[in-house]
Length: 120
Ligand SMILES: CC(C)(COP(=O)(O)OP(=O)(O)OC[C@H]1O[C@@H](n2cnc3c(N)ncnc32)[C@H](O)[C@@H]1OP(=O)(O)O)[C@@H](O)C(=O)NCCC(=O)NCCS
Image (tube, rainbow, N blue to C red; front, side):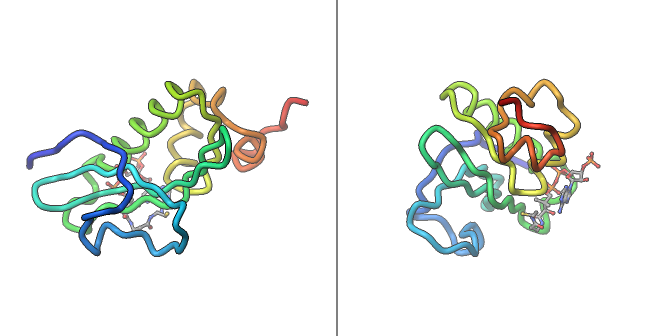
């Protein structure tokens, strides 16, 4: 299995299976190429907030930690860009619940999604 780097993508040139089923021109993705297939996570940017919406790994590649690789990279990219995170995608919620060191990234909606009180 040849795993590439997790890279941002606008969707141009992506194969159909990498396209999220969410409509909207402002949807962007982090994409991870594995052999000839693509795993991705879709997000929207709203000011300095990044909303993670959906994560997809092709069926044949599941259960190998690829989703977690994308989540970790996407959260690192969010941190380095100073973005606050809303993990609407359940895969992000599962990862962040198990990794309290990522909780400083949470926007108020993200804190609520993880069951935390927002600090006012
Ligand atoms: C969910 C999905 C992205 C997982 O991909 P994967 O590469 O097999 O996942 P990984 O091997 O990296 O990680 C598996 C972890 O994700 C968790 N996970 C799997 N599916 C999940 C889900 N729907 N919601 C939350 N967490 C999930 C598992 O509990 C597992 O955690 P563990 O290792 O602590 O037990 C993949 O099965 C998929 O594309 N499914 C169809 C689309 C989908 O349901 N996306 C999620 C909702 S947006």
